[in-house]
Length: 541
Image 1 (tube, rainbow, N blue to C red):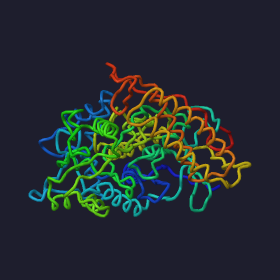
Image 2 (cartoon, rainbow, N blue to C red; image 1 turned 90 degrees about the vertical axis):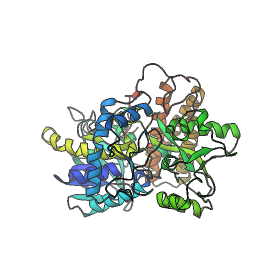
Image 3 (cartoon, rainbow, N blue to C red; image 1 turned 120 degrees about the vertical axis):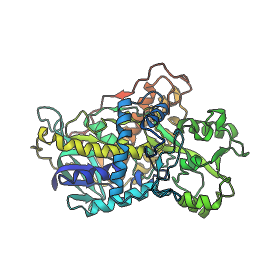
Image 4 (tube, rainbow, N blue to C red; image 1 turned 90 degrees about the horizontal axis):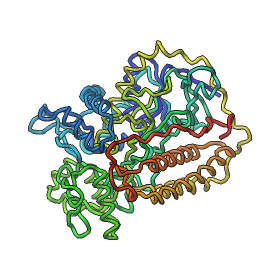
């Protein structure tokens, strides 16, 4: 087995992983590993933009208050302030790497700031309606051209390697990870003094999601198996407005459409969100998603609609070029007719317990971006705070790692060769596909926007049975990318269900019919007991 040595290993190529790599490369060598091509990530799909205080009439305090209010009492205020104050520096760093944000036509020196649900000011910087794509394009190019960054594509992380797993005395420390090269179909390892997880979220755990196929919770599952706690995993944000069309897969109608005057209406063309919140279509996402869910169930109709026909075709073509073009190709003229939409799983507010500089309870291991839970989002993420968090955490971890170099010794232990023992190639790939669909269907049916104790109990039984089947499959057959993703997906599914069962209230994104009230004191849902799963077959599950 080949083993690479590097000072810093970064896993994941969204905004967090790319920006961390670029900033770390100013002082040291970096190996950046990503399981598909470098430009495949949830960040690349982000439409709306990055929330950041850039208007003199806005303030950090206003952004903090909006974030805390949306987070339903579960935010860590120190984390919120740290991330929001770090925003302007992050924006300047993006612009240095060639990202261009829209400016006002009448005032070219000023940003053309959008407003989204939950925000009291216009503070969303955007590059048309393909902000994420514009950011990732620039950062990928910069990373590929940087001589200190080795970008390894099509390599999926299997598990972290820790000194505890190696039975080494002393504090349990991360020294790298195993990977599967999906092109060569061979396993290799990377040994590093510092390992940064920037693997994104886990919303592919649901049947309907706005996320790309890579969002299978890999980093969360790996960190959990390595012994780190996770928290607030029940707080899954459902984006209220995913395009409803048989030929559209995971295509979002950006919240910015509502920010520019789009109104949510039912099949009769009547607004309905106002019955749930006086802010109507600009209410926070959890409220809007529940309102849509209620309206769909009440009416028996398959979707609701966004009506922005009050705006001109010229305005819509200029402000939302990709959304306008995609709708037109599907036969929907958003300038003349409402757009059909449904909610879809969109963002994981919970994750691996981490600080805003990415540090965790395990020396040598850092977690940034969506796979981390810092306390920024609390019980519900404020729109466009996700790219902001990944951007700021990337800068923070790049500052933290050089300071920790002197306190963290170089890995002195070899990573053992991967052992497959008696595993054989699989001739039953249909089992993986069946279990994949069953996990996601179970989560959608029983752990969705509205929950009950009975649904959660049913989900837990089914997920645990599926995990036993997946465990046997993992042991009996040689690993493949599909098996690894299924293993991680099922692990994350159980973590979500377990956290949801622990929360005996309705708060933010977690709404249960059995406990419809919100408790006076907000408490985090933390899981500490990883179930002793193995890194590979040298110590069976």
